[in-house]
Length: 118
Image (tube, rainbow, N blue to C red; front, side, top):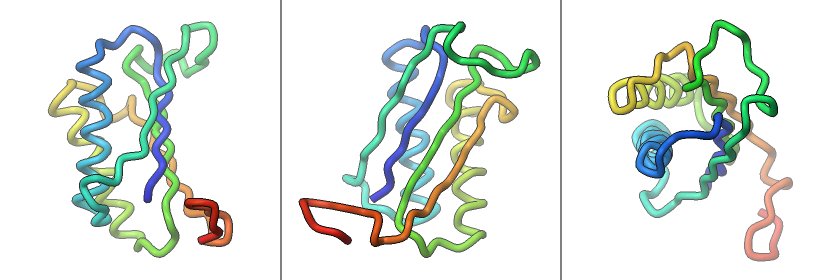
């Protein structure tokens, strides 16, 4: 049950934003084997003055933060990062240097689903 947060600058079309989410989701399906229905994703868009990035990054820069249950291997996470970055380049021409991915794996005791601690 991954939770995905994407931070990006305002200005992308609804179609581009859907493609971003689809690229991330497909990466999760392929690399760590989540179910296809398992989509808990959101995009937060920022005005330029509210999204400080290095001057050598482009307006396509995005931060992708993912939280999921612990237990995935280093190799699975490597493949996940590579797959997402590759898909964004292929489908939206986003340079890999403009994709910043952070993965967190909170312990199961820190997850509450349906009113119950996992």
